[in-house]
Length: 114
Image 1: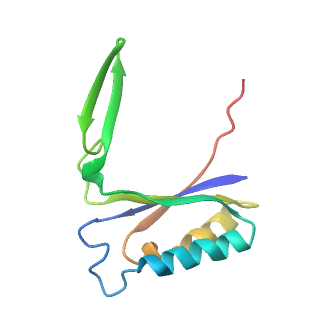
Image 2: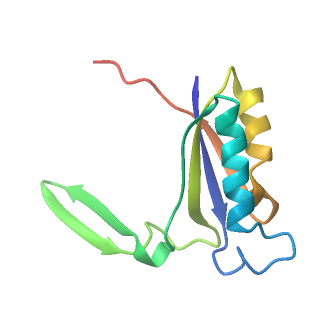
Image 3: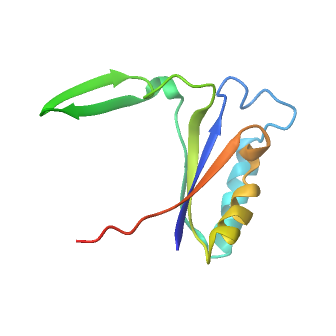
């Protein structure tokens, strides 16, 4: 089953805490998950200020610069993994270096039916 591990953190603190991971550590962890055959995709995201939120209401498109909502933590990146079950997905998520300074939300991917 596919699981999406969403990495959240306070962007202002992501690289300034004693436990903050360096990019090289994050890349090494992603490579280790890839080596185990469980990685489907992983990416770090640009800062939340670069986001554009799109809404369509009554056929009208509305664009807003920035995130959907103001929060203390922002979506910083993701790992899309293949895991036997939630326990294995959580095991992968707890190893994500950014979990030390933020949080990782683990969600199963829903298969869309035609």
